[in-house]
Amino acid sequence: MNETQKAEFLKSLPTLEEAYILYSHLTHVPYTVYNEESGEDEAFLFTNLETAKAKAMELAEKKIQPTIAIKTNQKELIMIVSSFFVYGITAMHWTTDEGEAVYKVREVIKRPDFSNLPEQQRPLENPSLQISMIYYMQELRRKDPTTDVKHLQELDEEMSANIKRAKYLLPIADKSEGDQKNIQQILFRLNETTSLVPLFSDGMEYQRFKAGKEEVKAIIVTFEQLATMEIPQGTNGYIVNPGGVGVTLTKDYIQKIHEMFE
Image 1: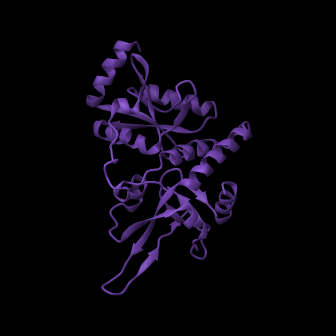
Image 2: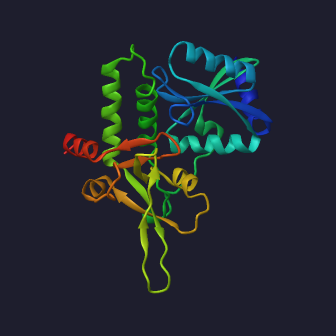
Image 3: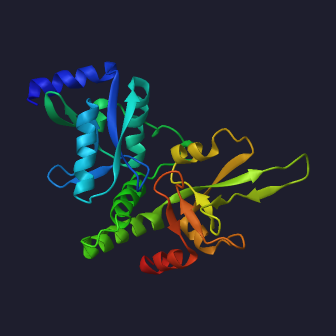
């Protein structure tokens, strides 16, 4: 696209009736690529289904990872683009009938400003953690024998550093009645033999899990608290964002991160 076409398409985005976005089977969130030239973390969007499918097939053939083109309407598109701030995605790579164009997310939608709110009232967000988990899991779960092991280790180290500095939402079930306190730990069943304690990097992921369950509440915990907390007997550790990237934190892994960044 030339600059005029880019400007015209940007103006048309609020009225776009349908669009397609590449999602990853490996992370259950938008497929994202780091653009070394621009320094942006880009998600891929399309105005044409066949073009979106072709890109997904191209990635699959290169063994980059399985992807799928998801159709969105105008309302869903606004919600998806708004979620990019939480995911740490900073740019939108659009392919249209006129060509390709990249827009910074903040050019398309205004980021909510919570700076005037007291810290305890601001929504919990961890975009650096989210984007580092996305990149690590996109590589780890490919199971491609040609994967660059050194690069994977670098991604792991960056994610681990963000895991260490993050705060999390830990869900609990408050089934108290009157003066009878009854707080129960919530578990996420991964399969028939494995249960994990769910954790959430932000309110968006937590609300997806909560899904209107009134008895489910959340408390904020730090990594240091996780390192000392007892997990329920029979569980294997924690899982961060089970509806999304689903990063497992075993007690051994937590201890490893704790020692790495003391």
